[in-house]
Image (cartoon, rainbow, N blue to C red):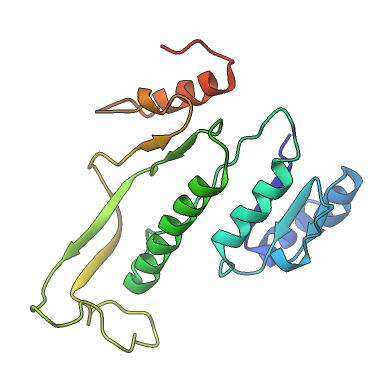
Length: 201
C-alpha cells in the first residue's frame, strides 16, 4: 500500500470519516502509520506516515524532500507522485506555485541517482492569458488585493480547463521514450518499464 501520504483539509476529512463512524488517526496507527498534523511533526524514524494538515499552505519542496527520505529507505525503489495546484483564479498564487514546482523538479533532479526516472507533466491545460500591459510596468499589482481578485492584473486566469496539449518531460531510465505527441496512457507504460515490469515498447 501507500507508505507516505501528505495532504490538507484535516478538519473536513476527519469530520467526514467520523460521520461514517471511523476514527482516522486510530485506524492509521493500528495499521502502522505515524499520523501527523504538519510536516514539522515528522520524525526521521517514520517509515509509514500520513501528514494531514489543515491548509495547503505547507512547503511542497519540504514535503517532497521528506517523502523521498522515507521512501528511499526501500532498497527495491519507490514511486512518488507530487501534485501542486497552479490552476487557480488567484494569479499571484498560481504563479508562485509554478515557481515552487519548478524548483522542486530542479532540486529533485539534482538530488536523486541516475537510476531514478523523473517525469514532469500536467493532468490538463487551463485558461491563462496576457490581457494588457506596458513595457517596463509590472504585470501584477505590487500590492495584491485583500480578496485575491485578479481584475487589476495584466494576467487573467479562469477557472476552466482547456484543450491544449500539455508538456511531458522526463530524465532518467526510459526518458528517451518520451518525445513528440504521445497518449497520456503511454506514461504508465514508460513508468512500468522503468521498474522492469514491462518490456520497453
